[in-house]
Length: 275
Image (cartoon, rainbow, N blue to C red; front, side, top):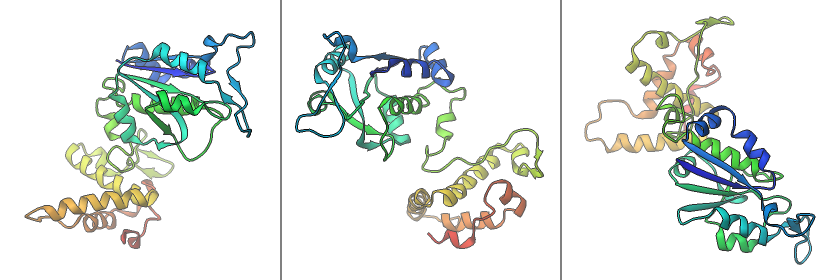
């Protein structure tokens, strides 16, 4: 079981969020443990002060080092990975979430106000991590995003064993569109291949549609994907198929107009394949 301890001034934010949905089920099934701890437990004044003005002046208040130190040491042990939620850290992606899911114990430090004392980072933090190039009022929302993302890679958390591996970004591509009943809705029909019952054909079709969706919505990701696929293709001694970009282009051109429409690919153009 992966154990996660979150150090925060607002433990109720964490405790409430992890009691619902996928995270709630993971906690109930003992696949994941999430506990919140507040540095206010280790304050000694009657106001339970956890912040003070920064040396040298400046905007905002800085979280006091001593209560943070005591809170970290309360939960830390030799297998702990201590992470500070910070816009200065590396940016979260699926690979990092999967990497974190394999840890034994994670400690997330959620800053507030103007941040935390740098000496805490120097002494205790193993990594700073960001969820994007913007600033939030505190690290709690970032911690919850990371916990939710990594939980999906813990075996048994999702209903289907391959669900996380099929999600967007798991193989560098966005996920293909999905459909459920009814077969016809708003004048749009589910693509014929999806109701044909041939799972091998369906799988290959989904892979190609996934690549097309990525080309349309995230050409930056598509360029990286097609570069890797082309390198694989060029390394083969016997080339029995067309080059990846050519094969994908042919697949797209053979899609009936109504299928392009229902897949959200109607405005994808032939020249978009010139990457």
